[in-house]
Image: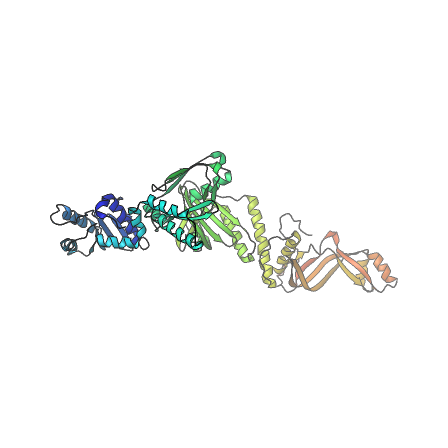
Length: 560
């Protein structure tokens, strides 16, 4: 069914042409109807593609613009002259008639001495273009109620050919849905007795040309603190997350837009979900910290999770090693940005875990920041300090643990991720291993006694030891290993010593040896309830006294 151009009237003619131009150019250009209808300074519809401007001038002259029709050609000429001020690449006159040779010559003659293409889109081209976009034509020409009634009658018929009939009728119903509106259509699905309808734009700028808004009035008694926070993130800052409002939280929901869609609902659940993959997700991003002069003091690379904007401000989501950062940046500069940071070291190599910990500390200290996405600034501001002294101390201890693990792994050439959990005894062993690798002397908390088998008591120093006189002892073990997270890490050759060692039950051992015992097992213990000292034999000698280095672990008494 073709459009009866001589009967549609000026407003309907303008609407049809605008819908058609959007469909023709929206994928490759920016289309804008100036002042809705009627034009502005020689422009009814402007189409911008890169640096090129194309201007459409709409004139509802169903019976043409012959010289005998006073005022029409001067009006066209005036519109052209005003359009030329915008330096267009092309100017198109749109009319609902079939132009004569004289009328075409008049329009094409307007471009003399002008560097602009001029052409006419008349009835023939309009009909041809609409034939390729039949849903636009149908939305303006068909009796929608009659079509819907016909299809509904078919739905009650028996499906004689089963799935093939069902598919055929659903497609026809879909075409009817497509013809309801030139900019929007409805996709649908059935789940039991429930019919799901999904509104879909027919072209990329449907939401601008024919905007649709949702307004709901809520009930405060149905809003939990968690739900209120989720609404603020989604609606206030454009965070792409699902928000489900139960019926008890929704007083009414109003959809405003085209007449066929406008409606008010009550006692409904409202589910707000991201429409699909976030645009730009996975794009390289960088979070930089800046000082008061705007100089970058640190920067961390990551990947963009999402950019959003709402009524209160903008949101930036960035994935970095060990965490997800979300910054809610208000439009009001007087309000500081809000930070949310999920944090986990599980699965990270120690080197990456240290980087994640340093980033976390900077975020908590409160600093100026700047986020860039693919080299372009996406947001900036200043974070408030959120770290107490206790939090800073715990971060320092966690960083020390990861740093110890990194050093020991590189020394032993055994690489594995940071353990999710580590028993206290493993943490102490790791700290001791790090100090040994660094060439320090330690008081080993795992070496309080030393068991030896003595085969004789002729040596004077041994006799003095067994009689209770403290003696100096040093021995070497070629394979000094520590157990960390179920792994045995070989540190190399270690020396164990103490300058004041006593023998437990030494007198009875001496008596047994003097009485002819071939051998006797004795237990040696450092005097004054101290521990044996250790150092690695292969580490460089720094010339310092072999004084035990402190472990520096919170909640752990230093070994003596």
